[in-house]
Length: 316
Ligand code: SF4
Image (tube, rainbow, N blue to C red; front, side, top):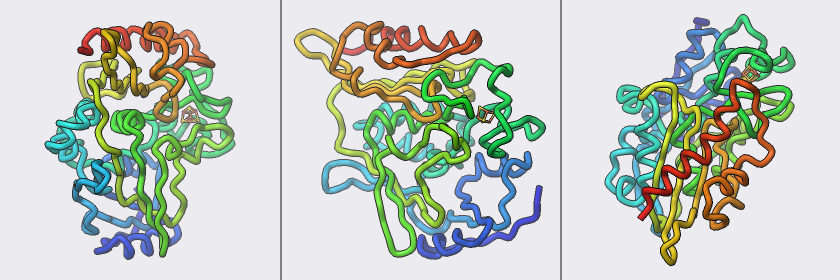
């Protein structure tokens, strides 16, 4: 690991100032960054530890929603009574991710910022446009069954690893951001970037900006479901995951919100699939429009309609 200096600010303003130093990286739970540093994928010159700047509360908003501080731990968010009662898709997504120990440590802002688990990204002997722009993509034509089938490019076919973000996408969450003297909000839909020609650019967060929280709109009516298909029963990233909110109208199950993980480099939601066809295959056709798979990733396509059919059967 490369040597680095370390700083522990006491306020968000101090953290923003400290993070502006050349080569600085913010650390919260460290459940992704420390691995990346040990493997030589990231080598920050300066670490800004934001664990003592506050931002660790979950509060009701005047609009009836919920504001989640950036440093709330994944486990605390999953267990919060209001989240369990009004946003159960978020609780279920959180508890399906990582392990109990990691959820105790990982922050929600770190979860938003976590990087892909593409095996070639983690192998510094292999070419990777995300790790070293212009070096090539070893995954294309390489070995692996958990690459993107939607939104990929000739430069990168990685997937986004978060479960939490898939639920946030279905819930239309908003990310709150602060920089020196300014605040802004960005919809979760626009926070993560597709790879295009610049897979090293992963989020809309700009240098000098700090995530301060996530806001959930007021709760949705209906049944909320999170399902995850993965290589083993726990502690594995999604092959395909799904956040669903559904209601029953005149005896028919209606998809109100639908987002998928494991298909692309960001949570994948196609609004045209919502409040449209009732048949899972027809809904899946809309979700998968433009999908491109190879022999090793073709299994993901039928999973979309099968997961949907299985989930819709449970909606009452
Ligand atoms: Fe790197 Fe993306 Fe290619 Fe993986 S898929 S090797 S992250 S460029």
